[in-house]
Length: 589
Image (tube, rainbow, N blue to C red; front, side):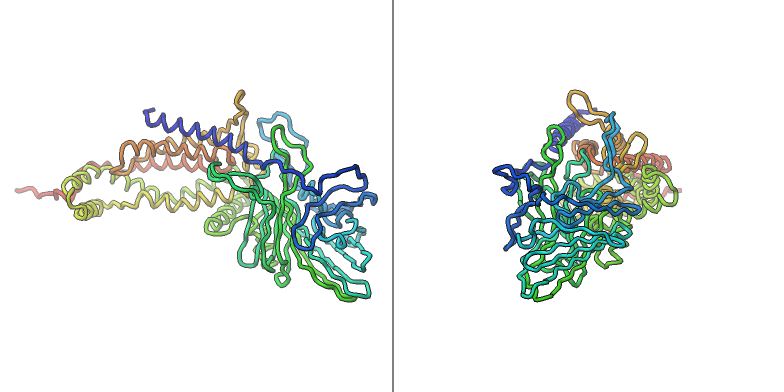
């Protein structure tokens, strides 16, 4: 390896070490101090589970459940989910997704941790559809639960005549239909204060989840908006160099909240409203979770999300009824697309497949699923086959690009001669250079066009693979979970992961870069640096999902094969074979 290569490799190794250390330091939010509502001056055995203060005008600082009334739980189970309802808050305490494990243990961990099923809203302080607000809207926080023919009813009556009734009905496609009625049973008007209707709490999925993928998203009928857990953390941006002030609350909307979601990387809780009855606002706050943190890690956090409804007056015997359909399940695009089409609310946007790159992410995911359905192969082999098909589609374009770059390399001496001849006339030089390329059927854009066309595919695959639940737990050779790095073991002494696929990817990309001819006229030092640029990909994809590394490795190896085949089938080009400087002369007889 030459001197330039050694310098580039050294820099990349340093960057990789720095990236890993910084990621470990900043991937989880810093532990948050408990709010005043969690501080207890003296023992009070009659209360537990404090609820965070709400800054919405007119709301009380919080409330505590009265545990003198025992908690009552009722469970509904269908084919794919188990729904547990609680009397404390009168809502959905948790949703267990029976088809999905909580975690997938990495191969380097010899002992398999105790594992359950993936659970939504787990360890949250309040249930889904708890109504928060002033004390006269909450009371002791306990509801009466009763079973119905196909669901659960939660009821509570207040001294001022207010009566709250919630009815839940579990359906298919991970949907729960909820109806809430707030009625005035008294003989006079009731001032109903502003309320927060809890959508749910985004929580990490198992002990190995650092929570960085937790977030909130909402949709106003025209566009979506989202934030992640880092929004509430003392974190840094742009390679961890610029600090940012943490936020304590996210509040948005202007009587236009069509749906709101609390989600993590692969699962979501979405509260979907009638488009004619949107919520006023959506609010989200970070909450500490009662989970034991990993050694050396900060306390786990979640994001509690709620719909905000304004204060109003209920007349005598008046009832306000609102209907909400909850989706509580995996972020599986085809399911969410069907739901979005049924309710006309684009619920599939929770996949974060919006915008230009999202179009390619959706197309790639649908294509990969189609191939999986046809072949019945595992998703690892599907990625390999899918990459081969993509390479075959782009084969003519990349082959033409390779031939064009080879021709330009062969014509470099003549270009240099033109540059020397017309050094005092740049315009003339450009004209003669274009004539030379045109005569030899060379396009200056030939080398850039394939990369420009394939870039949306690369970014689309990168976007798709972040939330494709199909890859969660999908194995391939030594990789146990294609949605995570393929860590084989931790390097002793430095506790650094040994991920094989990214190393294979980096080696293949270096091989390809050394086979690709440099652009004509490029400075030799710059050309050497460009040869080692693939190591940057190794740095940034080293701790990314194994599925992405598999795609890049196979794609690069196919590129190497194509480059070699193109060179083998291409007639050799010698400098001066065709030139506009000295046109060939006919031999005299």
